[in-house]
Image 1: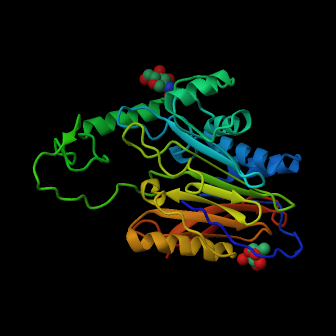
Image 2 (image 1 turned 120 degrees about the vertical axis):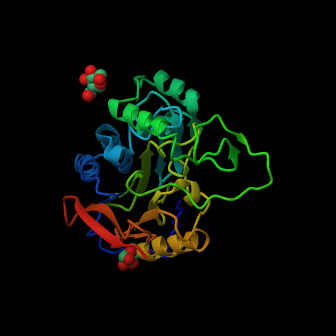
Image 3 (image 1 turned 45 degrees about the vertical axis):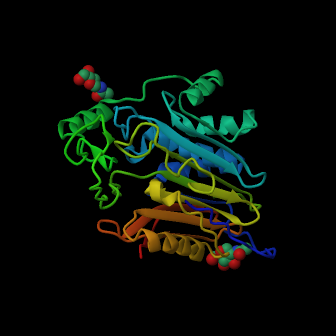
Length: 329
Ligand SMILES: *[C@@H]1O[C@H](CO)[C@@H](O)[C@H](O)[C@H]1NC(C)=O
Ligand SMILES: *[C@@H]1O[C@H](CO)[C@@H](O)[C@H](O)[C@H]1NC(C)=O
């Protein structure tokens, strides 16, 4: 979630000492390195964000990006990804992508080879195959094991509510609950250890901004569920006149907010999180923000088991990825 649209009125010709900049969610160091490497080889900011996120897809970062993770209620892994060019405001995105590993690559193909923004589901897979992406099974022994264990524990946890049979005890198929006694569910089932996303912002040496995200979504999700990650303005946003931002966390909640804010990255991230907190005090979510002069920041919502949010930063000064942490509030 985050269209941290940093309204920057006049960018004075500051020294671009810290540009270019790569910043990404979590401790995905190789992703930061891959993006940085692409920039060093004169790749564009788009090449860099794509390479960075693709690295995580290959490495199956935390099991939450790429193939073999987050099996849905039917045991299938599907992928969501998005890429945005902050110079042209072009976006390419895919969601519920099946059988194709390189989701961010397909997102870029949507941006470069079509006039569309967003292609989903089986049709996205066919599009990808036609564009030369290999079709392969995304299941792994690990995702199969996660799925079998979930079945054995009566499909707990799941994302159903007000249905019968009782979703807190039984597997489906579910139907709407007949009785009026509709008690609402406490809260979502996201937890930081089982759910995250790579979101990356790259700012080039002249202040060009590109962002990308890639995820396999929420474990045990209802098939077809798409969170915030592939939605421009929700999962990430880039505008080379202002900056860029990317989100991670409970996408079902975060995609309902499209905060906008001021010029300071940390302030922008913080106030975006504050706004969601007012409605969902316990939500799990974090944001990274960067502006066109290489300023960056992050913010996250504090909840049990999540008091610090790690992210990677590499810029002209550090020249190698550094792990940074922000205290959640
Ligand atoms: C997956 O499980 C099968 C059957 O148990 C086994 O033969 C195979 O080596 C496993 N693959 C990996 C990558 O562990
Ligand atoms: C970008 O952010 C940095 C750090 O907060 C700040 O010092 C700088 O003025 C910002 N740049 C612009 C153009 O607002």
